[in-house]
Amino acid sequence: MAKADRGPVSGISRSVSAQSVFCYIYTVVTNILDAFESATLPPSRFRHRDHVHMVWLYLSAGSLLTTLDRFPAALRRYAASHGNPGLYHETITWALVLLIHERRCRGVDTASWEEFAAANPDLFAWPEVLRRRYRPETLASADARRFFVLPDGASGAPSSASPGPGTDPPG
Image (cartoon, rainbow, N blue to C red; front, side, top):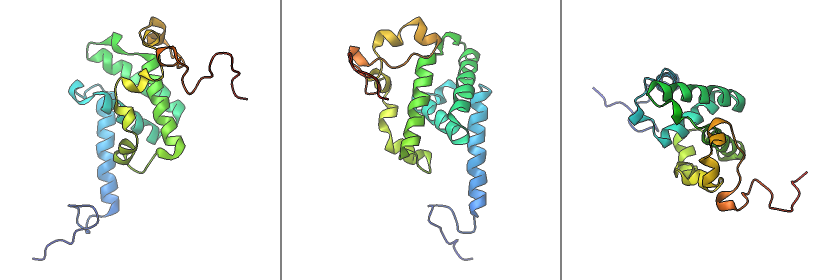
């Protein structure tokens, strides 16, 4: 019996069709999304990196507005079902969604999650990724937990997204 001819993806024989690989990947992604949305994904499998991955999946499947609707709602349900209803933080959630979306729009988005993650290591530096954009007291506020608050710059310094004191915004 001849050994199977191996294709460009290590361990996958050429006899496996691209459609089969796509179906497998689609099934895995669907299972991950379903486990998150049904809150059956164990908390040990949902750390910061997993949050970023989940947002990437939502953005891959839909628009920014759809993601800003679906992901926070699912995250609230997830936190509540695991006994932490007060854990949800609107500003942190929206800021991460918006950052990931921006990276995708700026052309850093790639064909795979692994390539996107490798091109954006700063997104995984928690909590530094938001400390550069928000003052600690802003993120600690009840308002920021309850509704999205625009970045106000780390340690009182203006962020790159906001004009400095005495300057007019562009346009």
